[in-house]
Image 1 (tube, rainbow, N blue to C red):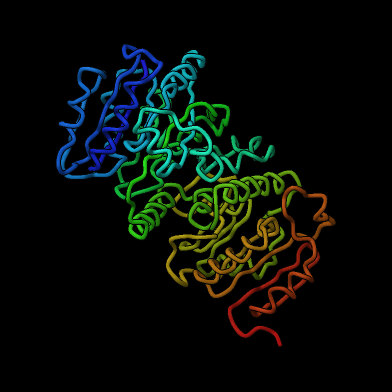
Image 2: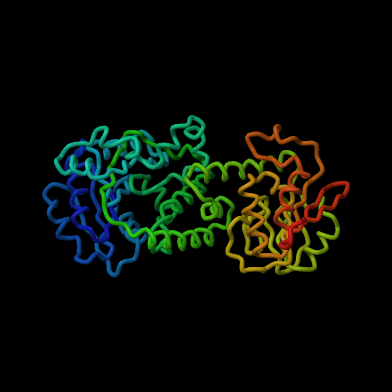
Length: 440
């Protein structure tokens, strides 16, 4: 059986259209159930749901006051009797074959865990008219600029190939299903998310890591379709809530991939690229014996021992450091003093540290991300020491990863905006960057 979980808040007229779409499914009604979780709506949504009692196997759960979509969906998961749960927004009108697509996916998994991400057309008035008349919208009512917001990403073969490396980035619960065993294993949604946005990404982030970053657990269906019904949204308020939720995500998961969610401007494809490249940077440092604190000049090692600083390096957690210092060592477990951040967008207070020292990982940052790293590092400390291990690697050798080979060019570039001092040792070059007057 497939359980459909619908968190709903107000907008009963939209919920009615979505429930109507579920009466027209090709999947027989004895093979699914519908759970409407009324998140404190005023007026209550039970009368809307009751109108479908003779056509749908439906239950309406209500709680007060409004507690957010995470809480509401968890109530639906708790009540689910199916082997898989389809999360369908109350404003996502289902294509007649939607439930069958999700049911078949999980049946074909034969008990193995799985997440299926369906598509949602972002329709407007013409397609709405077709749906209200009982017709399935066809082009030009859908498609082109009225398609799924992720479609442009998957038009490129390499993005279609690589999305499974960070599938949680694309996982939106307006049309997504997962086996119920997995949902319960990760304890469902995090109920600290009470505002709009991000609670679905965070859930599937935990699923991804629960299965040891196995992207094969995830799939995208071109045929599991729904239609986003037009409704009013107060975007300034929603974006403020999303920003607050990003802070919750980062506090829960102090890792560079979650950090980049709040740091990267632009669409999911940009976020995917940056996460993949930072993953690759860590692996490259391991393989090439870069990013090691053993090459630090003694003055920097002593400074990190004497004063609270941040050291970003593989093996950093083993180095002597001040009791209030922090490391970013991806080869050591997460602890209060060792995060897996990249220092792009953190919750550290202004000028919390005396310095940030980054060994080689910074060399794998794009120009935009290097700028973001410097700005954040100089917010939390007065100076950044960019340490480059002496090596003969060339930027072309490291493709598709970005890699800073030309340190002289980098010095010129940064000196236009910061005070930059360069020091050479046999093992490394150190660029010390501070706020202050740029070189004339």
